[in-house]
Image (cartoon, rainbow, N blue to C red; front, side, top):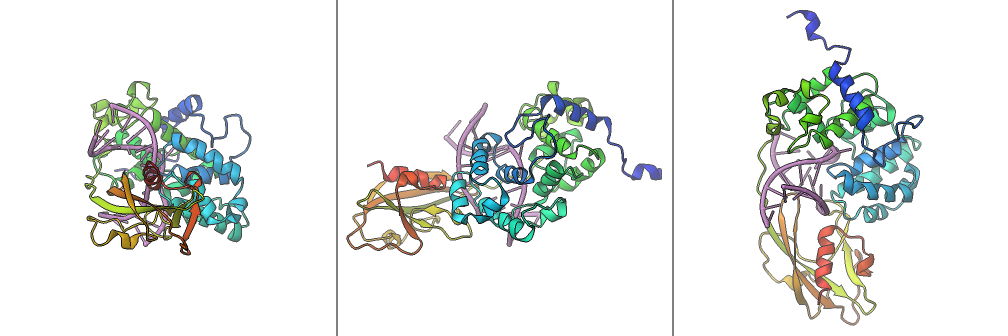
Length: 355
DNA sequence: CACGCGTGGCC
DNA sequence: TGGCCAAGCGT
């Protein structure tokens, strides 16, 4: 093999230019994108916020929630100055609550240790809380015009089809990165990243990809072979076990309900919820030992919810606070309609109020 | 590397 | 209707 072929080409191949040209015509109009006529670079804070929110969360879901965050906290110093519980409350319903905890941590670090300015390179960004390989590369490329290889689920799918990569994910990641190194342009790195993601979202979809509309189909090995839907190859998933628990909805005479803040780590960490038992395979022992007060508890129904790794059934009990009840340090009275809760707790509250 | 970690939409 | 999927990260 000639030496020259072992060195990566400094010039991006036709595929890259064709994809960018397609992006110029078909880029999605998204709230966190600066328009084609915008001058200068996008705001790194806005790019960071959108990227954190978009981790494992759909564009449709993020849209309105992103606008709320940006209005409430217009810059990183404002977010850093807010109490963590305000960020968690605003995040309620979005899931993966570690993202919200790390969002606040990151804002504090940027405000306190970086003078309110985000690092302008991949390594600096990668060192911040909640920013991993993908997000560091995305911010570096989109906000700072750095050549950074951006790999998300869309990119993995597009590349694995382009080259019919048979290795299952996530082991295929290194091979995908090597392929991308050879086609990633020096200029318009952020646009190229977003062109791959837009292609994956709108054309090169998981099911029934629109290869007839694809600007790079003629370069695609899977399209040539008709094997598009066989890629990417993924490792088999585990079955979700069932768990069960009980929660207690205690109300007072002011129409408030008792909530408690969950421990910082673990499932729904730092979020408000109803007091209750642990969630295990079986409900055993004295349920009411886990109740927040002595009361005439009445079961009003069951809430079911599926998390990433288990199915949950919650027995929901309603009761009224006895005279002289004193709440614990982690507990607070809140009107149920005003509580910012994770979805599973919102379901449980709805069932407690049915009677 | 494998696992824990949410939620809503889609077929 | 239950599994799959979505701009992943931390440990």
